Length: 223
Length: 142
Image 1 (spheres, rainbow over the protein chains, first blue to last red):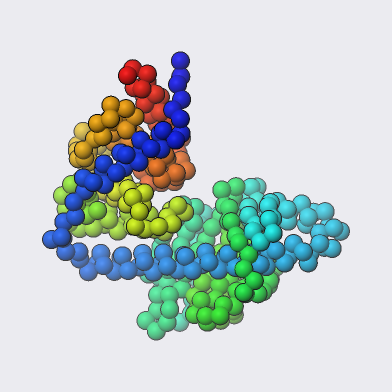
Image 2 (spheres, rainbow over the protein chains, first blue to last red):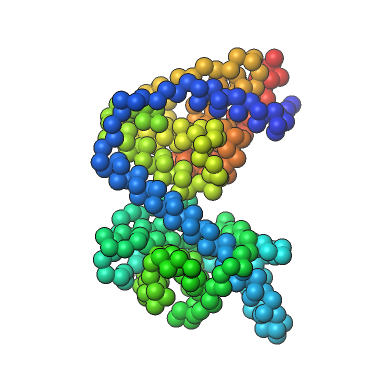
């Protein structure tokens, strides 16, 4: 007969094993890492930091979606198709928090085949990282802050939990007929553009020290 | 972290690659990292480093995953001697122990565990449930 183990008991036991493993690991102070390793770790830290910044931006973008839900009530009441699609996208709205889920039916293109064909002068690809379903492209410049482009597919696993923050008013724009949000941050080095490309089945996010026009050119050049 | 990778690879450059990959995987990929300096994150790094090292070893030697269990020694650690569940988890094969820890202690999804261990999600799910059956059986036999 199958016997199940209480979850709490299992968690306590797993923590005991984890602590035993950690207690057995000794650091080796004599280790000297190579220059290549140091560079690789610096890039990891940069991307991780940018990623946190971008997630923070996305949190703020909740304000836009919350506003859209209110202001588009008339539009949604007369357009059943738009309403259906809109509410497939936005499943849950709780005052200042929303959960975005993307269309299940959209078949995303293969992300690793995508590249930014246009970049501002001086930028070159420094790192290409796969983070689950997400592809992150980090571009460096000798004279300016890094630029991060993120490509994520629409699918049932793509879920973004967002808390509203009224400090920033993102701008809803259209790029070649596709919906996008532009976030003009107080920090001019960290503006963000998010493009929802339903044709390709992906969300493209650009974060960096660029003008809105430059960011639009970048997302237009992602092919 | 470096020592764990070196124990598997015995090569400085490869061990550095394993550590760098593990940090990327942990701090960029994982949605679960909230605090860096906590036992759960350290444990996640340990498991990730070791498995990244095993991936590199596998690529270098062109070994299959099945062959590796004999080639690579398990982590050396003092097993809890409670005669109960913790001891049983410690005695699981390394890969199953990693799956149980990542699932139960780190609360990762099967898909995320599969990415860390370079396995199919279904395989991870099956191994997890089989490991729980083994653990339940060991408790029954006490």
